[in-house]
Image (tube, rainbow, N blue to C red; front, side, top):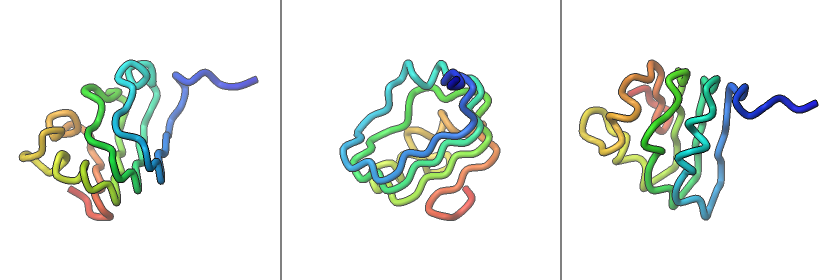
Length: 94
């Protein structure tokens, strides 16, 4: 028996060469998600407008279009992630 998606604690998106956007609705249902790991997604343009409040760890690396958007206080997506306690961008805590 498979666990429902709402019980997922960690999701990794890696080497997704064609991923440009996330499904906004799908993330709203991941109410147990604690860690989101995104790496080598060269054309990923932004984060979802809302991330689960359960998210405590966000790791992003090698995502050139996303990097400026998640910069502390200046990035367009910073308001979305500012409340997350542990944010790692290209192996550095921000």
